[in-house]
Length: 202
Image: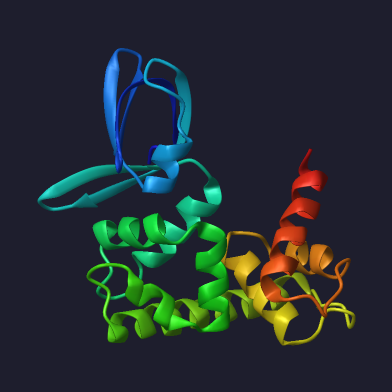
């Protein structure tokens, strides 16, 4: 598995970036969000990657952040969502909003993406929300971790789930969220939690 690429950007389109590493140009399918964040052609760039392999197709997908990569990997586990559909969804919705949409169960947001109907949108929310809940329970049992009593409320629960969709552990999410006013809306809680987690990683 190719985890990441670092090299010179030699070509860029709205949903494609070609990165040259060791004289080889790697074509990475990507989102509009990632493409817009890349430097100009000729500059050095770094992408987190996912190698998609099927009998008749091998493609490399690249993302500016691990959060976006994580959302992509979760999306393609949903029945009916292929890599192209996943890229389209993440081009319309950034990873933070995607996580919040899944956590809140607001499937209508996904129908704004071309090719995603109401049934598929509902399936995305149902399957991923369920998956996050199972992973959270397994992690909690394995670690003997308990969510602090100060971490409660619907907005906080949505924010916790969204942070876990983004790839953070339940302990990391709860630790950050417990320092934030639970009366704030879930979007604001997520933004502040990401800042707290980011500052702890420096």
